[in-house]
Image (cartoon, rainbow over all chains, first blue to last red):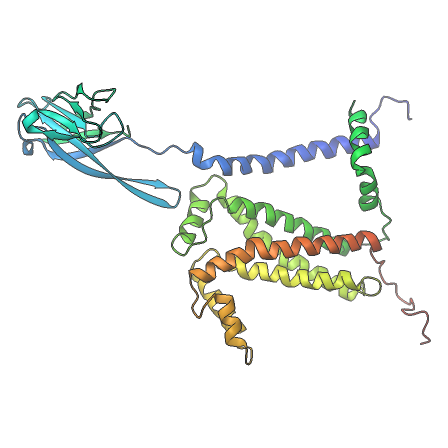
Length: 163
Length: 227
């Protein structure tokens, strides 16, 4: 018997034990790993259309700030962040407008439209952007973020994105 | 190759000696009632592992405890499974430990030379009940709050020192965030440390003394004495 090529009882038991052990290990291990990785894998939906009210309420050729808040949920915690968008209507038409984020592209300070010098001014490091959002002075590496916009039944909306 | 690795390790660690001692020891002919100790140990390990996993997301603070458990149940992948196992494992463990005690009692297995095994076992039983009591508060829901209110109030009915015991348990006269924090601490640090220590002694004695055989009908209990 000892020389035969048939599977011995002892070997069979070993194989079954190792096999079942592997199956049990997977059944326990996969949920355990998924449990630990869950918050890392789940992606929050960060895009949303934000209504900014009737388009007519915004003056022509004068960047006007609209502030709004977004709530983020991390686990058991809610965080409310505020954002701002500058609406600039360069014409009468529904599509004759641009909406810029007021977040400086340098280090995320908030820029302010300053009428007398005709720029979006960032107080942190003296960054300046012109009416079209382009950098004119200071350290910002990129122009202001421009929101996607739409006007439906006279109501202006922007597509919010975490930038 | 594997043989070589095992031999190399064994020369240094002496694992086979321990293995022979622990798993290849002589055991009398016994029945299923004798598996309750192993079952209790297994449940303790399960509770330990699932408990460690729960501590990843649980927050022992009055304003976040409930929310963090809601998050475990609804937000975390398989969170319901981990908490479910911990929840039901707790109940099972109390039952198994208790029946394990009954078996030892009814079969007279606590007698010489196993008195210390019995004594550590009794403390382990109380520690297990303590785990159940402290863990019950942690979900911080209505049931948890009122169960602990009543439970600590019962401890407060002890004559003379009752009020002191109640204050020690609650960390003040009210059931508060202080109570939650100390119950959490006792649940995850103090009692598990006690249980691990006592299980070690308990297991050492089981290996050292072997387990008792089942009492047989008609067998004289104390052969030295005349009935």
